[in-house]
Amino acid sequence: MNFLRRMLPQALKLSGRSALPLLRCAERWADVIPAPPPQQVKTLEQMPGPSAAGFVWDLFFRRGLSRLHQLQVEGRKKYGPVWKASFGPILTVHVAEPELIEQVLRQEGQQPMRSDLSSWKDYRQLRGEGYGLLTAEGEEWQNVRRLLGKHMLRPKAVEAYDRTLNSVVTDLIEKLKLRKQQDSSGVVTDISAEFYRFGLEGISSVLFESRIGCLDPVVPVETERFIQSINSMFVLTLLTMAMPQWLHRLLPKPWDTFCRCWDYMFQFAKGHIEQRLQEEKQKLARGEQLEGRYLTYYLSQAGMPLKSVYSNVTELLLAGVDTISSTLSWSLYELSRHPDIQNALRDEVQSVMKGRTVPDASDVAAMPLMKAVMKEILRLYPVIPANARVITDKDIKVGGYLIPRNTLITLCHYATSRDPKHFRDPDAFVPQRWLSRSEGSHPYASVPFGVGKRSCIGRRIAELEVYLALSRILIHFNVEPAKEGDTVHPMTRTLLVPDRQINLRFIER
Ligand code: HEM
Image: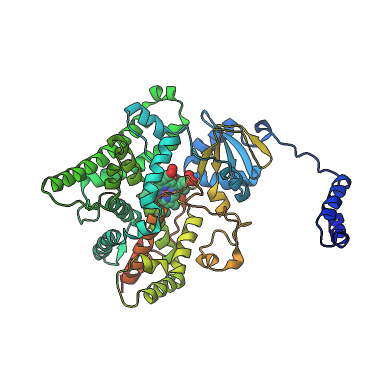
């Protein structure tokens, strides 16, 4: 390098205005500079990692399934940025460095695959159900993605949901008032449960443009059963993935329960879709005009077979519940412990709202601290702590290793977003870090919605929903911890969720 630095000015002097002598000179240098030694590409066999027995021990005897996010951090420390582990019949390569995660995602191809070993897919095959956006692959995935993208990714299309979502937020505020009144010290216990219902009502309103009563004083039994089914299904996802098919006959309970959860989720979605399509038919018969602005309508109008409408709506419903609940629960948990940030955020909301009480999409777009709070919450508590990719069309090189095609690659987002190398004081809640350019972290160090073609299609809806809900909650309440020093940690249940109830005191303003 030094040699080049000394030679370059000389070469430019020699060259005058013509580039030709410079090129000749460069050719001569190329002869002089010794070629770098060829990079040794290592194989999977040379990759470090725990023994199969050690990993199973960690998973099943050290509560590893609920600590998978923590095992990422431990694995990174013990083995470095790339390591392998066997999980039942599955060999997976873990990648826990932003640069290397970027290397994987840049090689994912036109129709990326998240995982081909999913028990979610096995269920669909067994029952003859269709695939939704979460589980579909190839052409089928691309077609649905294109169609849904028009209504879920374009900013203008998403902004149009603000009225619908605001009516759900109004019910949430009423429900919180009711819940706080039921306790003499204004404590709402298990705030996540309330946010599950809010998440389900929110995504239902976007999908059906009608309300399904999740936030009514008495919650419909089907709603609670649907939420319960999602919970149990997530608890059983990793276990059913790790169990080979033949073990299902020997130990049938996990697989049977898992299937029953999915059965109910499909049944719930089908019931709502059929009811909604029936209403449209009746309108048409009465000669009324249809002006559907909801996702189920768009899907059915695009000529999508009913079987695919069912599976897509089921998967969207499911995707919109825990993600929203977890993000809102952790946001209020941290804001209640940081009254200074809570006050600053409230000031920001009020200064944008200028005396109005219900924000719209353009208001929340003008709230930088609000956006920073959500980014920081998802850095600390990424709802999807580990994502995955399977590259099917070629072997790829990552971090000096050759990873054969069809290998399951786990992207350890929790480990990178809690790494002190990338975020100063990584376990602290510091939303301001996202406001100053000086703390520029690697762009792949915290990517809670994923990156690229297969990234979260619900991102804009989720952001709008969280911003609208947080703004209104802060206008109506001061939020405090129910008990000082009551610490809640995250745990993995496929998704990252609070390990115990979050209880908060709501003080009406
Ligand atoms: C804070 C909230 C949310 C977070 C953090 C989140 C995160 C993610 C992540 C990490 C992925 C995988 C991306 C990848 O593989 O690269 C994903 C996929 C997906 N998300 Fe979300 N999500 C959220 C909310 C939502 C909501 C509200 C919906 C529905 C309206 C939704 C629907 C989906 C769907 C359908 C996919 C699959 C996309 C595809 O395979 O093409 N998500 N999400």
